[in-house]
Image (cartoon, rainbow, N blue to C red; front, side, top):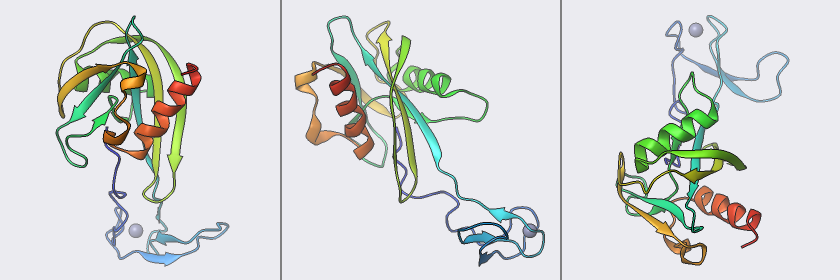
Length: 175
Ligand SMILES: [Zn+2]
């Protein structure tokens, strides 16, 4: 899962429609300052890109985490997840990312929570899923490992949102 260090279009200076320079202004009827195109009226909104992921759970209560092998936070642990694509639901994105990053199918998704923060704009949608296999390292990961709840490597998690989601999962399970 990518935590996202900044919005990909945060520093765009030109209108994506007509190519004119953008100007900082408060659009009519709005309350926030935006980058707007005075030529064609386009308003350059900066919206966070949702991330969806799963916490796969095995029959013995262990959960699967993957070790990232890309930056940012290469070498740190995270549950499988990534940016939603246009055309898929959050559940579909979570399942696809789990298959890509952990080569694992999961079923019976149950929402654990939606975790957001300001700044670069992070929206992480996290499900628990019943693991239908053991999984193995896949895209962007060097290793998968099953952790008992008391073995979760809290000091080696990749992102704040990883910790928030795992704590919410543990609380939900009464751990
Ligand atoms: Zn324009």
